[in-house]
Length: 540
Image 1 (tube, rainbow, N blue to C red):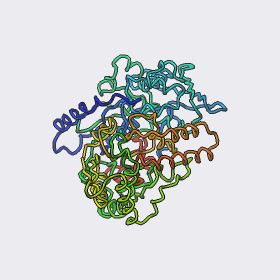
Image 2: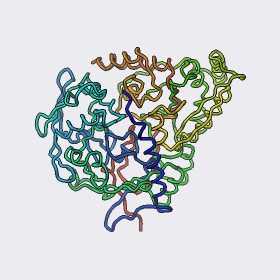
Image 3: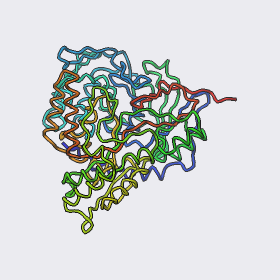
Image 4: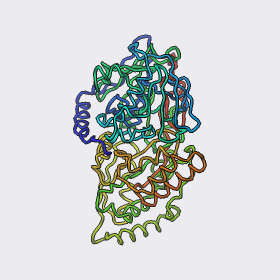
């Protein structure tokens, strides 16, 4: 089902307006209390919520990763290790998982129990919660009908066998479950606080966490603050005392703040500045292969875009080599498929035949396809690209606009703040959407499920193909990893032929990190839990 999140858009506009009005002007960084070690990080965008069931962005996950711990958690390289669960067992058919929880408490001293997880998994799937990420948990037995409103939450295949024993039953084998279990969708929320305060539990004055830190303040447009949680089960190995997460949509401005020492790190760099920054700020630039893809989504509700010839023409006319090699120059690679290279348990899909053609041939074919669809000099296709205002989209969208102009398409650009853009995509308020996807777990299904007809809000273009859905379902039931990889490659090839999206480039992660920060390990998922970080004292 499609979640009723259209109501969020006006509220979000008002929130961001208030954020701008309330933000302290010209302030560099919050003061660090005497004797404390503080970490100031540029976090990309303003969170829409601090509730793990209400958010979708990497910038929000970055905060939650420091404050909440699921059944598993990240190590310093982004790999899944035991979290609230000390160990687990799996039935021979891979369908029943039993997790044994450690002795741990919430930051208010209340024990973390299996009931917290049962409550949390039911909550995120309840239609009233309106979580657009609920579909990620359709792997749980009975999750889809609950999320559709066709079954009671109590029918979910999750139960507490005791205060410290959680049993999870799946719809199909999912060997990637330990990776998924560290994602925010499977983080627990404190049952006792949610029952007491409702959604207000996630505001700083009511926030209760089970992770290394506890959120204490959220100043809209300025920062979210978290302090060390002394009740965290591994608190003795946490170095940083306080963390400040700042919204930094302007990567160049944030770059200057890092250089001045106002920020210790920023989670993005404008790609075409990387080479220069390596010279002017030696030791600060951190880049690494990333499990992510940037793409354009075509809204299937727009009459012109219902025609596959139009979608194919728009995709083949984009000069991806120029965008990655000349404009961005940050190590990104052109994307003609959707699943990035390097994803585990994957086999490459077959890219479109035109992917190997010279640009001139692709442009000629794009013009032919547009003409066959009824568009040409006398009747040009007019289309709008809605895009995010972050560094790379702002850099490359004019290039795509120019590429389309060369094949006779009149494209308009509509720039939006990141949260506003994604809110528009979710309610289908766009024609062509600039989007990006970062793997929630290291498996091709983390990308391909976006196009499943049951996914809902995050299937921005409303792509529907029963053959594609059937292949994903078949892959879910296939126990042989190699055979499963082939089925998923076939599914991706099927989807690419339909052109619901135009992949543009595969990501690298790009961070600007002060050499004073220790413990930062570059990795595929770009996960850097603050638990593992520390800070050298500045030289005298």
